Length: 273
Image (cartoon, rainbow, N blue to C red):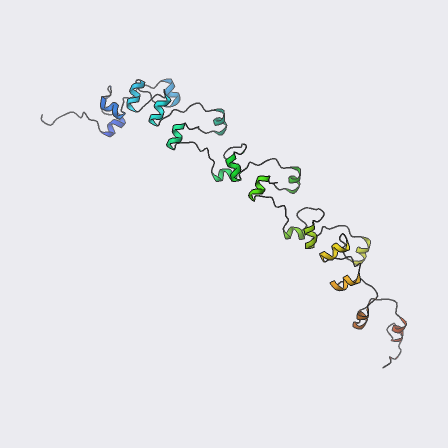
C-alpha cells in the first residue's frame, strides 16, 4: 500500500547469479531458465555439466543433464560424448547433425594451408582433395631418390603439377640435370654429355661427339672434313690451301724447292722482281 514491497521480480543480474533467494524456482523462473544451484552428480562432474532437479524441470528451464539427444538438439546444447577411434586419432570432436545445421562443427574440411602442409591429418586423400590437387607425400622411387625430386602422379600431370623433368638451359649447359645419353632435343640444341676424348681428339684439341652428322647439327666437329671446317671457321693442321698460301697462313712443314729458292728456309738468294 505504502509503496514498500519486496523485490519479487529478480533483476537479470540476480537471475544470472541466483542472488535473489535460494528457493524452489517459481513458474517465471522456470520459464526463464533460472534455477538454484545444487551439488552436481558424479556424471555431471565427469561431463562438466550441471544437473537440475529432473528432466522435466530441465526441459522447462533450458538446462539439461544430457539425458536425451532430442532435448539437446532442441536447446543447442550437447554433452561431450566419448570420441570415436577416428576422433581420437585426429584429436577433434565430431559434430552432431544438429550442430552441423546450426553451423557448429569441427574443422572437418581442411584449409588450403592444411592441405598444402598436410597438417590436417595423415591419411589417404579424399576425392575432394584429389580434385583440388592435394596429396600426401609418398615414398619416393629409386629414380626419384637418385634425382632428388618428386615424381608426379598421372593426376598431378593432368593438373599441371609436375616435377622438373625437362632440364633448363643452365642444366643442359652444365650437365647438372643427370648424366645420360643426350635426347634428340639436346642434340638439336647442341648439348652433349662429356666423354673421354679419343687419342686423335687429344692430339687435335677437339671434342668428338657421337657421329659427324650429329656433330654438324650441334656445331661441334671432329675435324673430319675440311669443307665442314671451312664452313665453321675451324681447321685442323693440314697442307695449306691456295687461299692460305696467298694470306701467308700455313703450317710449318718441310720447305718446298720454291720456298728454298725464295730464301724462306735460310738461303740468302736474291728474289726475282
